Image 1: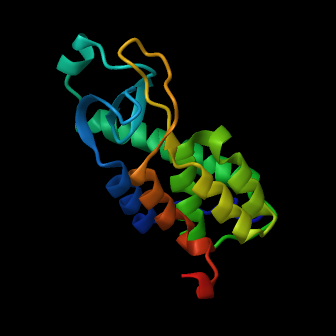
Image 2 (image 1 turned 60 degrees about the vertical axis):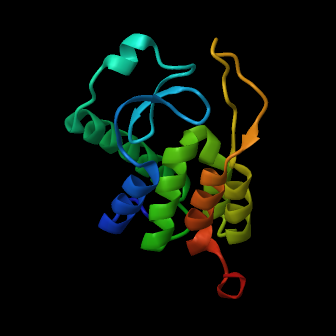
Image 3 (image 1 turned 180 degrees about the horizontal axis):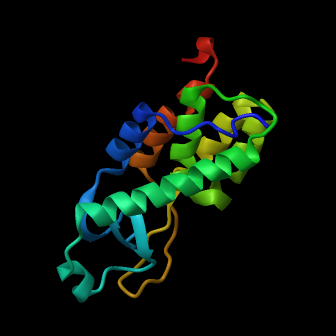
Length: 165
C-alpha cells in the first residue's frame, strides 16, 4: 500500500507549527471558538472566564499537536493508497487534514488518491471559510478567512503543475 510507512518530515512539522502559531493560553479563534495551543479546539463557542484564566503548558500543547498530527497522518495513509505521494505532498495533506479535520479533508484526499492534482487544489481552496459564533455560541454566516487562503496556497503548492506556479 502506497504511503503506509511515510511519516511527516521535520520540515512538515515545522511548517505546521508555524502555521498554527502556538498560543500558551486559551483564546477565542477567528470563529469565536474556545481554542488553545496549536489550534486545538477545546469546544465550540467562546472561552469561559475560567478557561481564560487557565494556564496551558508546553507539554499540553506538544501532546495535543502530536495527537492531532498522528490522526491526520493516519487519515492520509488510510485514504491515499493508490498513489505514492512525494514527501512535500504528504506533509501538506497532513497539514490540510489537521486544519480541516478528517471529514473536511476527505474530498481532497480522494482526489489525491485518484492522482487528480487539480481536484486536490480545487477541494483545498474551497475550505477557506470560517463560521463565527456569537457570544452565545450560535453559528453565524460564513466569512472568508485570509489566513486560510494563505495557508491553502502553501498546502496546494506541491499539487500545482509547474506552469501554474
